[in-house]
Structures are given as structure tokens and as C-alpha cells.
Length: 215
Image 1 (cartoon, helix red, strand yellow):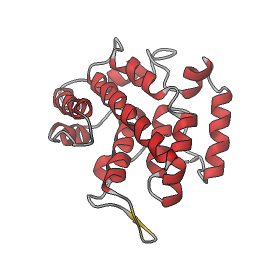
Image 2 (tube, one colour):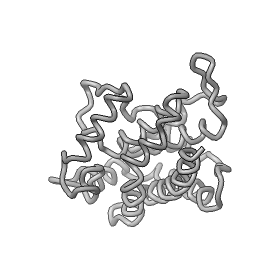
Image 3 (cartoon, helix red, strand yellow):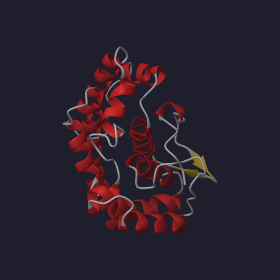
């Protein structure tokens, strides 16, 4: 399956093309936001990504809340250049035994790790044609991996059609709750802004994908 290794800086400025398919500007921005969130949650950001975020301008993606969240992330990235974000990431998601947060769908949906939600996710990933890379050690229901799948689905017409169902089954019920907890986590400084962006983005995604599923 795709792993959260790409970030917004890796993406083309124009809509991507695949076999003559041109995504809408809105879907390109959605894809980039999913990939950025995935990258930030897969590992602590490096200096290059922080510098890029610090110099970015708020996106016009619909809604004052989302634009404010982008601005907060840019400010947090500027401050993060002088902080030990590796330590912050470790305390939040790894810890000694476990981090402050457990970023797995199974934990949020069933309060267990490697539970039924993970099995159902794996079944759907196989149906969608995703394969797990041998160098990936986290289970597929890690928030970064689920976000990366949402981004990958936005790169083909069939994937865009599958996005609403995948979101409904594997992200809607727990994604915003995870970001809400991240935004208020004791160990979070830079990652509070990541949590805020995730909350605002997924709130708009629920509305967007609900309307897409009905058309």
C-alpha cells in the first residue's frame, strides 16, 4: 500500500494527469492537503518542510476556519525551526511503551490495537488495488497511512469515485476526534496547529464527500 512519504512540496503546481485525466483544482488541493497531513503524522518534519510551511500563505480552500488553521500552521512551523520536534513527535506518538496518543483507527473505533477495523480496512485496500510495502512497519490503520490512501485515491477517476465510501468507512468516524485530541495534547506545541488544520479540513471533507456521494 502507499506509505506516507510524499509531501506537498513533491506535488506539481498544475492538476496531475493520468491517461488523459485532469483533476479539478479543488481535488488537487485536497490531495495535497491529505499528503501534507500524512507526512507530518508519519514522522517529525525536517527543516526543509518547516521552512516551506513557514513561508506559505493561507489557502483559499473554503471557510475562514481552514484559512486560519493554515496561518496557524505557518506560524507554528516558523517557531518549530528552533524546537526539538523529534522529541515532540516521540512524546506524542511513540513514548516509553506508548505515546500520549495512539494514532490508529482500531484504537479509536474498538479501543483495541489490530482489531476488526484494521481487518476491514485491509480487505478494502486489497479491493482497491493497494499493496503494503515490505519496509513499512506500522499497521495500515495508522492515521498517516489512511490519509495517504485518501490522497492516492484522488489521482484517478475511479479513485475519486471511491473516495466518499472509503472516507465513510475508514476515516469519518474517528479522524476528527484524533485531530481534536492532537490539538489539545499536553506534549503538543507545533502539533497543536497540525491538529487544528486536520479538524478544519476533515470537517469540510465530510460536507464535500457527502455531497459527492449524492451526485
